[in-house]
Figure 1 (cartoon, one colour):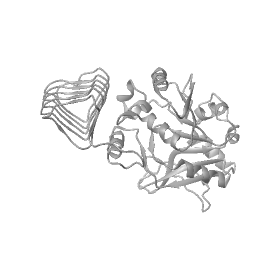
Figure 2 (cartoon, one colour):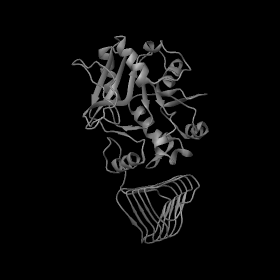
Figure 3 (cartoon, rainbow, N blue to C red):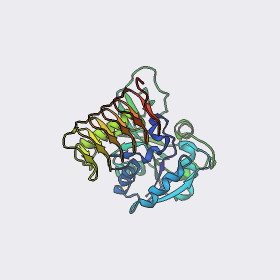
Figure 4 (cartoon, rainbow, N blue to C red):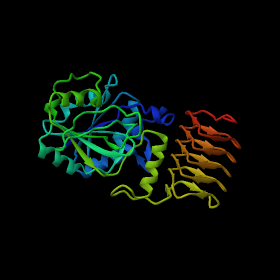
Length: 340
């Protein structure tokens, strides 16, 4: 089986981390999040994956060169952003004639893709959409289905908290059903392709699941993904908590909470406190500093005696000695100002 993984987004909700690193290449514990996605696909028999992007494209090439084993990666350069639907249509020449998977690259899930494919084939669907139940559908919109599982419509995001099933960002598609759309056009699969398929009477089904599912597109959810992985909430994923890379330097007098990830070559100084936080490669927490509910990007530095709470520091950002910040986002290479 083949798959198209959508990795072309600019990750605006995760800025400033994504100013220098594409969202799919941000680390989740010890590897890029895209590695976890590809490993999940391989476990379900996917042997070839198509990736495409026009944003920070060069950064993907090193990832592809370093990646070994299943699935094999085919790269397509997007001259212009094509959207979720346009990227899929643009990849059709690489997926063959059989049903294929398409999925958002910023979703962390242990969804049973094998069962979803069996569901799709049994119903001979034009498309099957993975569904996830939430208590508040406002950020997502609702996907109601009929008794036989056919999708009735894609509803806009409700204005009030409403429970229901949402589009979980994983699809199985019949390539023969996508010939109505032109390659190279910017298209949305959610707002254009699926609604048009449903309106024309083609069989589009929903596949409900109680699998683990998380959209990691915001700093809060990105941190939550780490906590869930450390807590063993994903099937087949196990990490020590806290997680400390073998070559990280942690002073014996430092305090690390359980929900902490310390990446390669990161340094945590004496009497420092780190809780509910992620430290990327080469990040530094100085002597007596406090880092709470925060993401430190690669090479970011928190000076001695500083306090950083509920903040995001991009690559090589700095909080000077003794400075305290809360709820801030510091861009790549920038320095936090006292009292910010």
